[in-house]
Length: 269
Image (cartoon, rainbow, N blue to C red; front, side, top):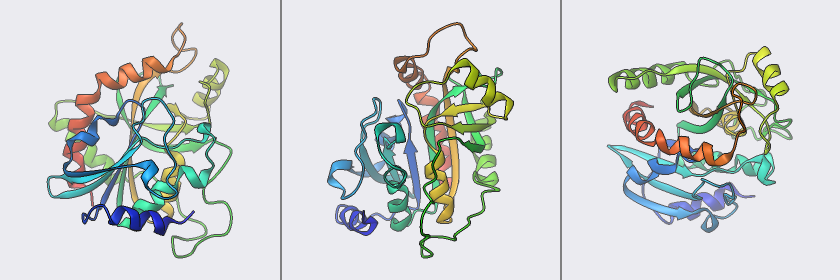
């Protein structure tokens, strides 16, 4: 796959040069409509770009402005559970980096492991545990993109998390922080797996985000990630988990998340 072909295809559609990238997770795509002077490009019109098949993912790249900041928004992402490999899952982040993105803001729908969380809570990811059984940086290293052994001691920017917390305070709300465990899916976890994840220090669990962050940090892109706790993980509540609930809770927090992103994005960089 050629990132450069995708870059050229996007540059042929808009003269805007994005400095901030945004990845929107399941049921969280409403933010894309907030951009001014926006150009929408369906994924199937970008060479090499994987098409979203997951429910709740629109499948388009939207480039526009939030204030004076030019933003590239992925309305939908690719996941391992769709049958894509790690190179395909992270293709978009490589392209955004080539376009000029220096800051990446990711959102996702996550299961709450920490019993202090409630459904609908927005949680900043402070760190992650990669349990997907794969890594997008495997194989020969492209030194033009980043180093062979990239440092992950601050995968999620401490400064960016402080910015997000300040923006939340201005809105009269607060943001917790937590460790996100990434599994491949597509099944939801078993109660035993959730007990294991809690034991090793996870507060949240999901099926995305970590591959993109690994690639972004490899390229020197600073990251901020926000999870929407759309369901409590298996075994915490005496009820089954279903994707419709995930989308429903995502819709309920839409307004809060959109307002938060609009406040945070101009302050990144």
